[in-house]
Length: 79
Image 1 (cartoon, rainbow, N blue to C red):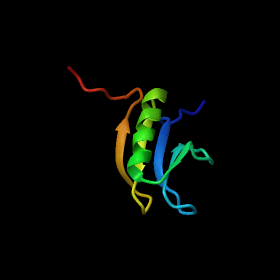
Image 2: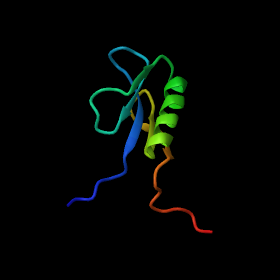
Image 3: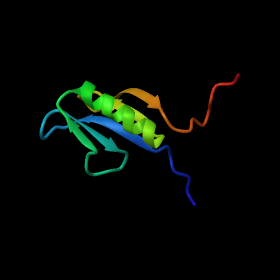
């Protein structure tokens, strides 16, 4: 069986309606839609913490600008 990558949530711009969406990695529908990026990030952080996923925050151009780990980090710091 193939090993899957980390479960993720993404904050991405909504090009059709404006504003920002929170999406689970691979999902078609958004978990939430927000007018501001900050509101989307705040909601996504809470969702990501509750579901132990990686959080990817994108810029308007779609590139990832920030990443937060709320899941089981495969390389935790020593000591």
